[in-house]
Amino acid sequence: MQLTKFGHACVRIDKDNRRLVVDPGGLTEPHALDGADAVLVTHEHFDHFSEEVLRKAAENNPALRIWTNASVAKQLDGLGTRVTTVGEGESFTAAGFEVKVYGTWHAPIHPDIPPVGNVGFLVDDTLFHPGDALTVPDATVDTLLLPVHGPWSTTGQLIDYVREVAPRDAYAIHDGALNDVGNAMLGGFLGDNGPGTGARYHGLAAGTSVDIG
Picture 1 (tube, one colour):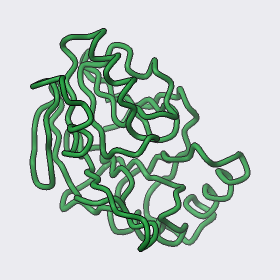
Picture 2 (spheres, rainbow, N blue to C red):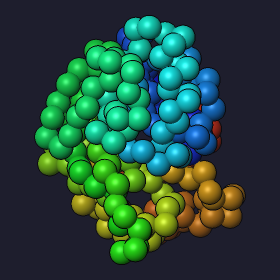
Picture 3 (cartoon, rainbow, N blue to C red):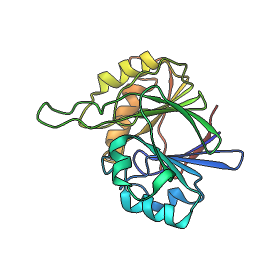
């Protein structure tokens, strides 16, 4: 598989002329959806989900299918069977990729902020995108997409999370609010100069592609 990083939390996965996009939100370049066969959306926050962008993509490509949780699916009312609601423990096939669903809730930010639903996606038993949660799948993960910056986590929690998931490689996502200094600082803690996670840590610039699996 080829993994391509787009803005913030969005990635594209290509394999055998099939294309799957995860979390094309408001901080993502719309061209991330060019040629997409299927889309996965972890939750409703604007940096992961853009109703306008997805509706336009669906209009341009009548074959496009979307899998997401109930709250996002509700906002895509009118697209009919092209949108499928999924939840914890379910599995499905999207554009030929085998996908398993893990998790239920977004990581808590503050007791006064109402929680929203969040699902993570394990693709082809290889790559895991947790959305905005530190969900640990009960499965082997080769490649973890690690949300490195948000109002709901600390660097210490990220170190422990990578240790618990125990992937071979961790690629940084959810970094749209970081400048170069912040990325370098996190890279130090999560990489070889940190206390150790057991995984190889990689930062990816938007538009960069790597082979995984």
